[in-house]
Image (cartoon, rainbow, N blue to C red):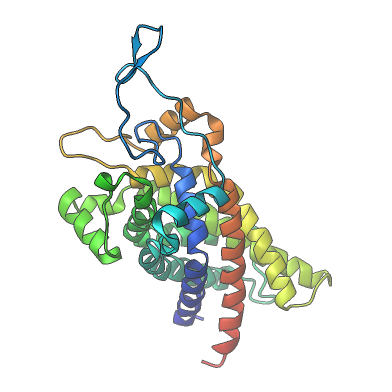
Length: 320
């Protein structure tokens, strides 16, 4: 398969990433809810200092308002449309396209190469453990290559939730990468890379290995034939498995990548483990599954579009 496998995977991934981008944006916004160092994004006007009647207590510096209520994906989607316009649902789509072109092109092409290398020469079958290993390796390499685009994508998706004065207002993914490198250093482009790599390993191993295994089982057991129905069934199951496994890492990755580090000031998180500790301490263990519904809602359709498109692209390019 060689280079063709990379091309096929890249085409399918760009199509899938572009079409499911709004769901990914909503997921990012949900994952950032409740961060203790950030203002309530729904309240962009400063609170005035006032005195509670009969309390002798002045509100302001000493009074801490309760955290903003958690809201679901539909509410967040509607809020984005009302406050930022419907086009805001595609904020950062240029970064998504670049990320998929780098990330999924690499991981899917490499996954196919490793599967071919480790397949039985007689039956062409690949054991499940080999598929998982191939997914882990392919995901790690793909994530390392695409991390700058991932950071830019997260920031562009999250920008609209900040007060106007604090927004980065990147014009495009190229503008985001250029400004980050100039103001925060080239190393900032690989911020959260350990989390990106870990997440990509989990997603790729669970997504692609699950898809291949379920598809093969359905066909070999005579439950379904090799067609669109089988591809959709196997890919949706693969998307669910990938969402369950990757969501906690994805929450921490999103927060570390999105954090704003002012010159001379301490970063909100010193690293991934510090982010985990602060998130769990202030918001509970359940915070690691913030955005799970949109993650599943996005990962399911994304995986279906990705793998069904991949199967169709393979048919079109089979003679090349």
